[in-house]
Structures are given as structure tokens and as C-alpha cells.
Image 1 (cartoon, helix red, strand yellow):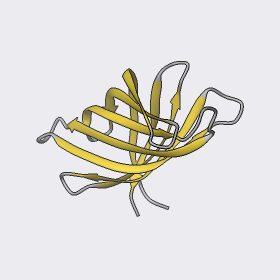
Image 2: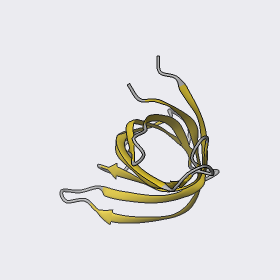
Image 3: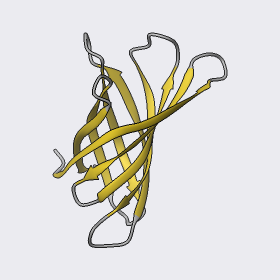
Image 4: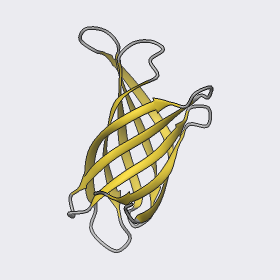
Length: 126
């Protein structure tokens, strides 16, 4: 089990959509908030939506953070999303976010579509 690095809490600030070749959509969602050890965070969570009503798929995080004790950093990583059964929420798992300062983190969280929030935990990546 990897060590916990803290929490993150983001709010939705906008979305855009594009058609996928062969059907479905790409949903590009923008977020801002805070993360333990990283200060203020701005990022984009990109969802591959293979078809209407799909209950899961791939996603990617791309973002920038402004730690209080150092220069800004950027990072990106790929993962998956899965609809939480019976709820208007998506469970998000990003296996490794490669950060420009050399950090490697794993994020587990949830997008709550009703409250437009993305919150969760960060861990050391294996």
C-alpha cells in the first residue's frame, strides 16, 4: 500500500466537447482548487466518452500547481473513470501523474456532477 500524500478539492469552471472519430465524445473539463503540498491547482480532466450512456472509460489529467514553498510545477497522467452505480457521480483513478519536479503521484477521487466538484486523495505512485 502506498503512502498517503494528502487530499485535493477542485471545483468545475467549464467544459467543452468534441466528436470522437468513430462515434462518441471527448469531454474536456476544467477545474481549479487546492491540493496538499501543491497549493493552488488549475487542471483539465479529459474524458473519452465512447457512446451515450457509457458507464466508464479512459481519462487524462493535465494541470499546473503553485506550491507555497517553491516554483510552479506541471503534471499529467492517464487513468479511468467509472460511473458510481445509481448516482450522478464518476469514480476517477489516475494511476501515475508525472510531475515536473520529479514527483510521481496516484490520485483516487470522485467527480460529483450535481455539485460540480472533483475531490479525493493523493498517494505515492508505485
